[in-house]
Image (tube, rainbow, N blue to C red):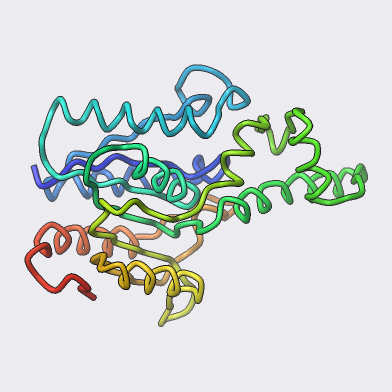
Length: 255
């Protein structure tokens, strides 16, 4: 086995929209020798509990349990595969897990606070369409959460504990992370990383982390209304993972 890959899923409805893509990518990685574990976190998919029962810490614990399960089956190198908000959760896991890991990141969210704000705006937009908008915007919603009241957003009951954990999260990976594959999707024939992502990549390289960063052309499948696939992202992932398991003895700032 080339390596163990533990998928850290996107947040809320983005997770559901991404399921076809992650399933296809997992099969593609398995074909080149990686063992891939995909789990539903507490309150998601087929797992126990309700979304409103979830906390940031419980989700970190779920991923740690998944890592432990893979250790009973293989000692191959560990990769955490974070998608969108899952990159924030993967960052927390790198600090909680006392072991070395590499990271595969798909369109990573860089700030938990910004990612949560985006989710809260979903409720504001929904309330506006229903002609039921309350004043105060996202600040009022945050105040409600801070007072201990859950909020229903697009069918998801967001608990104060989960919101607080996400608000504190960022993509600041532990020192034991030595290799990062950072892949994004952009429009046009010649897409590029966002300015914020490029800054984050440069910061990792300044830490002497081996980083392979690339943007590919394709649809933003995690937010499209209809189910979309992005074959170019899967192709880039397979190519990068083939390279990633051979790069340790080479230039630490590959690509």
